Length: 337
Image (cartoon, rainbow, N blue to C red; front, side, top):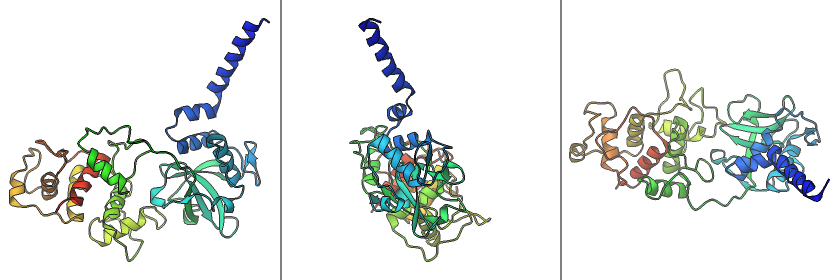
């Protein structure tokens, strides 16, 4: 075989390796290091649990975490769960990001005894003794959730100067910039805000309470909000304050989305916004009339708007509230004198 053919075959072999390598595709497709770690980790779903295991032939929990972090991010974590718990920066449950380490206590021994990786959407990727590498719920799992013991961030990613999906010319720009800098609302990923994603009732309670800073006297009110839920404190606090109520069946509707009508009424109540007759007279929405249950909230959204986001002749109250609309509404309420 001549040297030219050898060179071509070698080049093709390299291309084939990177096209088939899970790690190569993960790095190319994921939006952040944390997402890359999780995506690579998911390629081992179903690999059996082996106590002391540190390779794809079989993993234990800390061996699995150590393996995927080293291979994707070149981060060398200690070998044991207890040692891993002593590295990184502590992260509140409500501020978890994809790729954060999630720790559990009192599993097979007392104290910190298990670790996984937060995978987003209330899921933790870890090495379980029953199913091997698997996703388990962060909240709502009868075995894992009560054993949650904290989280650590070992990835210090350089955030972009601004979200890739928000232009500086957008009407919501100042509101999003202000509230993300204050930690009232977080980005959807490290470089996106996801302005059109819907707001759930649980998220709304948490965002409002990050501004109000209310402390509940009691934690458990609703059957669908366990004390271990990351929004449990906020939900209990806003409920006690009379800002958000649950339903007749003793549920809160944690994951339910809300309409713009509900958003307007909620924020007016949370910030005790008053609507003057003059302000009401200046509102020209054609899709809402006096006497509607959310009328005062809607009028307040328009009258305190400093961004121009709520201008126009329609409020679209029956549409779902988005992260963008909710952020603007909170920003306006925070800056109302």
